[in-house]
Length: 372
Image (cartoon, rainbow, N blue to C red; front, side, top):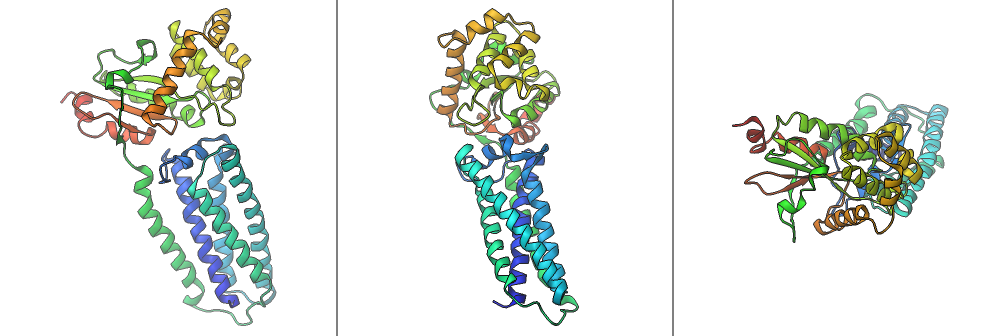
């Protein structure tokens, strides 16, 4: 390939990366889920703490990097000689760093999180091809004559239009909508947890059941939003909680114990107080150890001896957590948090936090809440 062709290929690839990283960034800040097959791998990777640097999603840093590579490709379109060489060198080092980080993130998602994120794989593939293109560019002679007029911005214009069109096509699928759930051997009533894990009016016609893990970052961030839904439900919405401990994932090793302690809190009438304390961002690390969980339990007024007794393998609290986990597997729930909405005359539906809010704003739930 000629220098000009390689440069334009690098620009198009950079805009492809902008699209991919943009989708993941948008999904993070809207609490949505990008389309990702049936395994739920994208959401699992996004929910893991390794997917955030300094509190921001890794995808955001990728978006900035791809935008910079696209700008550098545009600048090279109008550069010649030594200026072109310097711009190409900066791009090469950026791509080398991006490639190394992509490989590290791929290893983390596949080997540690044990989830396959198709968008992450696409970004790694783009960065790999970008590396090949920039290595090839390094061996090329710089252009001797400047491009002029529309010829400079034409490749960038095409890249922007394609990335924007692809994002416009994908965006509605990120937001998505709640889907009907197959209850299998369960009835709708079977899904509703005991009263000590319900909040809201006992007579509320709409029941929202959250399936979550106390060590789940996405569950922590959506907890307050879920409480607001009950508050805004005008007495027509109540919420229940069932445990889905992701104990096989890194950072979730104490999830079963956390669920068990919360079950003891439920028995003592302090389930929601414990959950709120456990989900406090200040306690993110504390709840990852048994000692930390016990200390959180003591802060909400639970008896230490009772907590430690509940943590024994044959305790009733452990049995209740296991029963919840079996239910999640039978229902085929893959992600945390997931919400199932039950209301008279409707098919139970399941969705993520964004889909939950949208569902309750639609008919017939809207009419039930507003008393029409």
